[in-house]
Image (cartoon, rainbow, N blue to C red; front, top):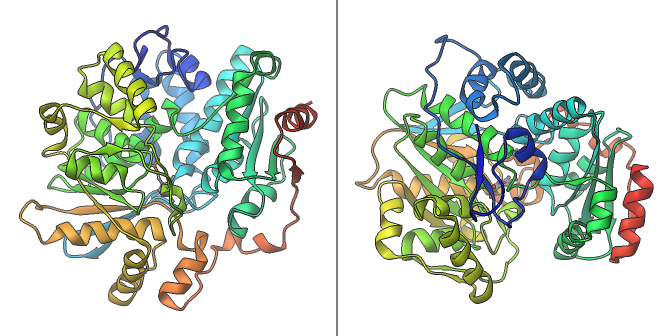
Length: 460
Ligand SMILES: *Cc1c(COP(=O)(O)O)cnc(C)c1O
């Protein structure tokens, strides 16, 4: 497979180069030059890993062959603590939840990052290269990225997090990983400061080259690719094409579903669930994509002002015209408003996306309601999803099964869950001693020079 940039002027690359590059050098995001047709299932009762290899192989060949891919997927998904990897649980008539949180750090990001870590190590070993991954996190991404590469021989990782602003569970998941190549660093600043420091390190050409910097943020194509698999696997278990309800902020998760449907997976449509940061819901319902300041919510992993992965759908809406996509997004950056033609929008939205947004009170009420009705406890991100499923379930547009994606384990957000249900959710057994483990972390000033010196000292 060859990959092209959504901005149209970066060189075409193969999978391995796209994996390591993250962002294209024209500022765009890489996408495959065509959407492959979904391979039929070779064995009816096959495992998640078998199907994962079949779904992803066209995207990674010829850089990664089938035997290698099988090996990488087997290792990545052996870290999940459920035999089905991403089990489906029925919660009502025609209502299902797909639990994506059985990986090591209890959020759906493990599905992609466990595999991406293994792929990085494989590609780098073949090239006899070593990279330093730097990233900023407000919580979930950092721990999933650290865990994903913690056993890798050819990768160092340094994750910056805002001192005192992550939850205790989130911080400990980063600071208690016992691997010499993984480093969590507390910055005396906010999440935005951490992101700015990472950007500044990438923009320092000398520093970037000297340390072979790389990134695994949510715009990395390999993460989107790995997420297409659970849509395929879930959809294929139903006789009637299901609707997926997706708690999303950056549009990454729902984009993966859209791609699965493009490839031919039997999927009816998608419901996007937002929190109060509702740019995607405003786009779908009111044709309004205007960026507003981020407001903190109970579902922090969806607290975003701009949905970075939307760029890949926009490229499709523009008939894969990179120059036009670049122009629109450059305009968006300067005005904070993305202008999309009405008929262009409706071709892509009607019959494909519906959306709803929920504030913190509705989120808490939904956690309590679902718990009372079914005994199931969900985290605040998932609750936005089940609330959206309930909103649309009774309407004329809705036929067939609905599957809400459960993106985090409730114990990852114990305060919100306890506030809603009166009960504090317990960490699963493999993390039961999280609060007894030794933490390994460093604190650094919100200063580029200090952070760069620390990165070099840690990865030497
Ligand atoms: C990252 C995350 C999301 C949002 O994912 P998108 O990439 O924005 O679609 C939702 N829920 C949880 C728990 C997350 O960690």
